[in-house]
Amino acid sequence: MSCRLCGEARTRAFAVRSLAYHDCPRCGYIGLAAADMPTREAERARYLLHRNDPADAGYRAFLLAFVEALPGLGPGLRILDYGSGPTPALAALLAERGCLVDAYDPCFAPSTAWRRRSYGLVAVHEVAEHLRFPRRALGALARRLDPGGRLALRTRFAPGDEAAFARWWYREDPTHVGFFRERSFACLAEFLDLELEELAPPDRAVFRRRA
Image (tube, rainbow, N blue to C red; front, side):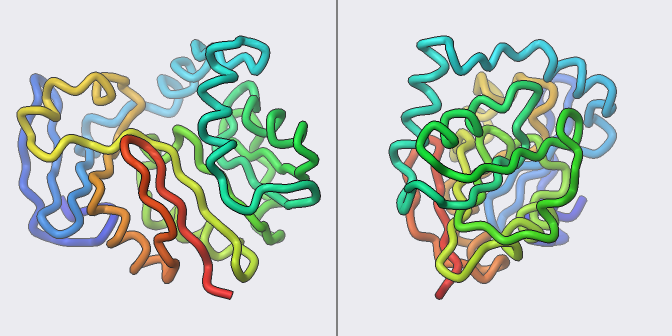
């Protein structure tokens, strides 16, 4: 299988129990084999189990750790919350700060009006690991950025070796189909023609469109 992030043809196949993965030697992306991906119906059912309540103190603190680290945040900033889920908690938190937020989710908020708009910030919070074709999806988002606009991702960075990956808790969610190592983001910046502005392990990367 070719790498779904960089297109490298010679990925290395390996298995974790009954699941097959492909590890890219070029960009470090680990992709679940297409045959093992969940159906759309199974994905939606899993998402409906999430309890992402912005009023929950623990979850709110988790979101705030991401929001408060975002550069350039302020009233009037137009933001796209991409992959907002059944409860757009991140969008609500950003709106509290005076931002103008559009929420998109293919299952729960499927309007594609965002494709005709531009944004100062696109937030991809705990979503990149669900993308079946990450380069295609993130490329579409990069094209919606204003000059100087930012694309901010939150996703757990994968361990460096496959034995650690096999034991990794983040891999166990059946809707997580792709995983980024730290070096994946430099490759992604090149593909998207963006500047990698910040890389903050264990789970945050911020890209900026050149002005």
